[in-house]
Image 1 (cartoon, rainbow, N blue to C red):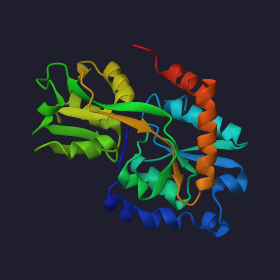
Image 2 (spheres, rainbow, N blue to C red):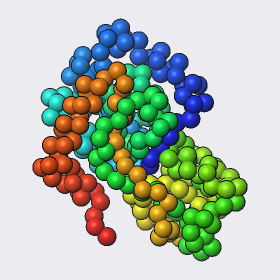
Image 3 (cartoon, helix red, strand yellow):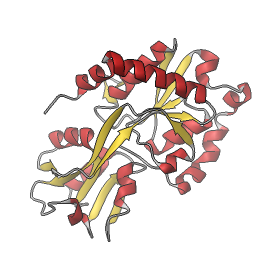
Image 4 (cartoon, rainbow, N blue to C red):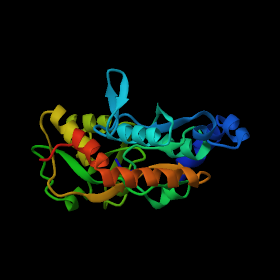
Length: 253
């Protein structure tokens, strides 16, 4: 799911987000420092990185964040929200970190900082099995479904003469495809696999649309936390724990 916030979304939501953060701002510290809780903002519509299982948010990102919290002597609290609210929540202090299959991009860097990447991912194209689309170039002039605020959303805008239909959830974009309301969906590879498995008559185009890095969003006012997380991620990579978590959810093909 790699992702981007537009300036229009930012300015329309900023007042509400910052207004709800006055208590943390008055304290002059993030929630992680004041109460020993590491608050993770995510969008639990992105399997296998974050999704609901038995009414609990689970997945790769949740396990990575919990490992970070444990290493820092904190308790993890997961806040599920709309994807395009995550950066604002981190910026405004409602969350300490944003972990949601999020790609580093210039638009987001205007509002938050990012840790070192913790994994690579790809944007892919979901199609109906009988689609005539054979390469990404064939998307020109087509109707493309994307999840609002994702990098798929960003990249779709660059497709020549394409009409972009934006949905709050990736699954809603896929449902639109099954109903022939769009010609294709651009989304991250791993959730794409899940959606195709769960919806008969769909396929993933062999050629990847983009390759990207996932990282964790942290407030620009909390560089200490970003450095601490980078230290934990380095330790997890060296010990093999990071790959162990990823392999638990993503099996080799």
